[in-house]
Length: 165
Ligand code: DLZ
Image (cartoon, rainbow, N blue to C red; front, side, top):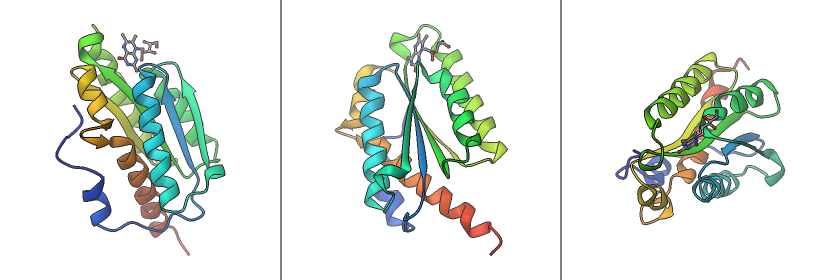
C-alpha cells in the first residue's frame, strides 16, 4: 500500500530543481482509470509547477498495470522524454491474482529502471481496497501523483548532475 506518512511536502522540503526544459512521459493504465487519471493530473500539475511546459509532457495510455512495463520501455527508448512516470492502480479486494500482477509490474518496472535509458518512476498504487486508492488520488491523503511528478524532476536533475559537461 502507498505510504500515508510521507508526502509531497517532504519531497519539496528537501529542495526542488528547476524543471525548465525537461520532457516527461507519463504512461497511464486504463484499469481503475478514475484513480489513474487523477494521479496523472497530480503528476502533470507538479511538473508544470516547477517549469515543465505542457507540450513537453507526453501522456500515453495502456490497458492495465502489467502493460506499463512494455509501454514505459518503448517510451524510454524513444528519446522523446527525459523520464517516464508509470501510473497504475491495483486493488487487492477486486483482483484475485493481485499478487501476481502487483509483483510482475513492480519487477518489470524495476528492471526497466535499472537499464538506465531514462529514470522510470514507480507510480503504481497497490491498495487493499478502493477507498485507500481514492484517499491517495486526491482524497484525504492528498494526491500521490504530485509525488511522482516531483520525483521525476529530481531524477532528471540527478542524471544531469552526472553528465560530462
Ligand atoms: C486483469 C487485471 C485485474 C484483475 N486487476 C487489475 C488491477 O486491479 N489493476 C490493473 O492495473 N490491472 C488489472 N488487471 C489487468 C492487468 O494489468 C493486465 O492488463 C492484463 O492481465 C492483461 O495483460
